[in-house]
Figure 1 (spheres, rainbow, N blue to C red):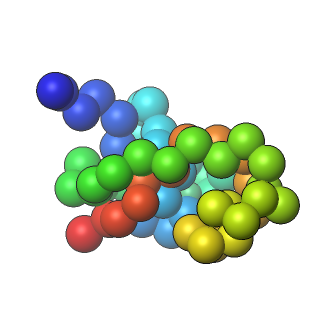
Figure 2: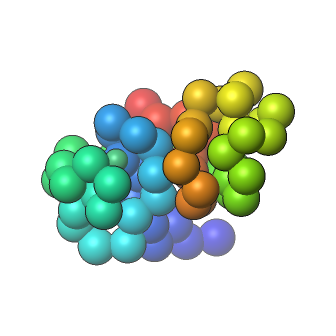
Length: 62
Ligand SMILES: [Zn+2]
């Protein structure tokens, strides 16, 4: 499975293109693992992974 998205090194958001829309950083990495989709930032899973904005995130970046 090809990974077309990159993960932001600051917030772990998965990004298409060269800039994180949340952080406005270009500090992105292709070396990421796992995907978590946060729909409700108040949910337990969002708190567990430390995410407070809905979106699609990498679980781990290297
Ligand atoms: Zn970011």
